[in-house]
Amino acid sequence: MKRIPVGLTDEQHARLKSEAARRRRSVGALIREAVDDAYPEESLVRRQAHARALQAIGKFHSGKSDIADQHDDYLAELDRW
Image (tube, rainbow, N blue to C red; front, side, top):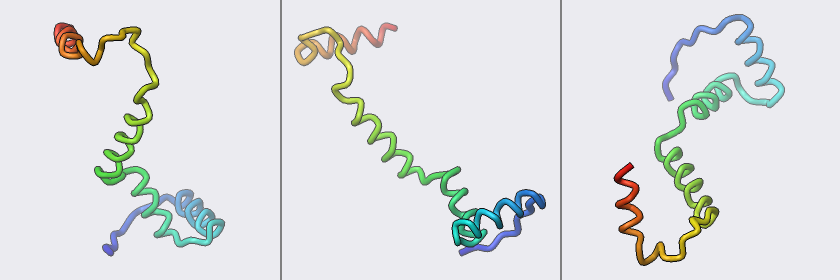
């Protein structure tokens, strides 16, 4: 674990100390948690995006009954836009 000096305002420090006491955690733990929330790992972001994409499958209806047979033609139409 790396230690770094971080400058906080008196108000920020007081809020952190208060929240740390409330949660029974250290100020450092709260800061590490905030960094993880603000800057998640790229793999986590990808997994979350993938999960959201999977949830969308089957949620919409195109009104077309021949997509399996004509999907290349429909995709070609999109390229023209």
